Image (cartoon, rainbow, N blue to C red; front, side, top):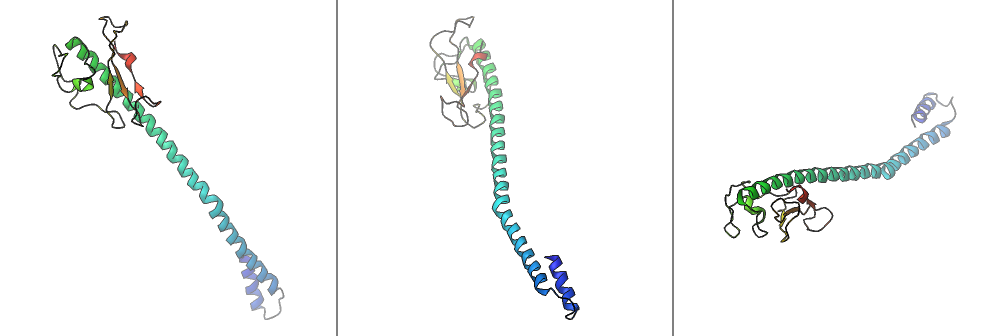
Length: 176
């Protein structure tokens, strides 16, 4: 394209002494057509790859965010576990299923009442997705518990907010 313009300029200055105007013009046109095809190729092939790269990067960020939230939730589950252990030492039992994790925030007013109560949290703890934890207290005592009490289970419903799915988290095995 550039060389075609240079050749056309020399032919014009040569006042008819230099031949090849048609060839120089053809070279210039072919150069412009090549540039146009290159730009169209970039639009057709390069831009989708860039967009796909953005989607992949976003998916990677989402997975990293989920891993971070999962770790934050596990830490929160550990603090609830510690608070439940202290509650059971002071109260003589774990909160009932109806009292749940809320018994760590406000003193229960329904049976079983704690012998000695102290707030473990100022607000109800939530998992990293903003969901309340599910508290379960089976009726059967746990053989691992030295006082032969039932062991509670605290569960995060995970990102989907639905109990019983694969993204649920629980650390019931950490309770004494």
